[in-house]
Length: 446
Image (cartoon, rainbow, N blue to C red):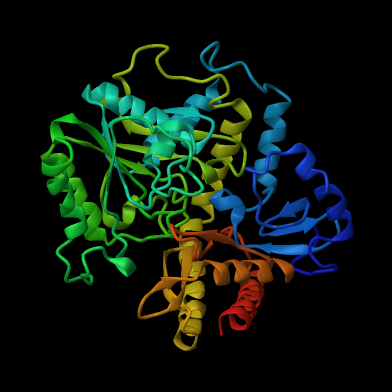
């Protein structure tokens, strides 16, 4: 693509896209939903071009997968070179160096100055599944705690850890046993009617009540959290919350697992979101932006924990594929060399400035929040009651798409508009996208 900014030539969907979309209902289950009613043809950086020639500015980033942008030349070249040499053997059959080199790199850059080990699978849900499996084996305990409003995936275990009934859990029971929930630090909608910072971290301290009223600590293997909740609505916990939970996990001998699948690799203004609080987890799951869209996920943890499982007890046919490892090594090089974490903070500051400006005059923007370039607006019908306004939020995203901007919905009430802009977006593209967003906000929410 040679284009440097968005430009729309047709309505969405255009005539060529519509012909292809007409085939969707006949061939693809309706459960596979999509946000933008078009057919993408090619993409580069923070821009996508559809089959009708419309150029969209991407504020979704493949749901946080494209921190280094669409089709970065260096990553494409690394994948092409690797594909010409070796596509697959399965690491458990005969190893290759890329897998080992990537594990070494993640062991080096993830939080914690202790010995670590890493292994690779294919997707975020698989990483969570395996982290839980290892934690249970290490502790020889069944219980796993997650947070309300959490999202960890759609498989049986990860769906059980997830805390949004529709569309993720409704009608799919029974859930996996020995999974439990504790309150999330949703400061905008505090369950205790308190206000940060004068709240005493009651939501974190609830875990001690939980151990008395729900299930004993001696049965718990791990607590897994997103250091910034994604699908739950970009809920940003106070740093004290994570520190308090860490101290309580240590007190009760429970492993602390960070799900950094959406927050990792520079997205929040740090290489990993854990760095904002200074909390070092015992294990970490990673995926999404690790390999610029090539399927790959990882579990990294304390060496003594990871070595609990015996040979053959963990693994997968495709995990740590040679091309995925080549892509990931190049991604990490780009993230570090180009200081994309710092760029994320700049992007986030621009976003927050514009959103706070809109919030001053538009009553339906109830809350504005985020870390780095992981930002969101919560849309409400009334600021006093905070009644969610999911339909209006959906209308904003739809109007943006018609004008060449791709955004995403989130939140347990479906009323949060979230943004995961590629960190390589240019200043011009960012401003153009925010202008489109501002116009949609003005027309729908005013």
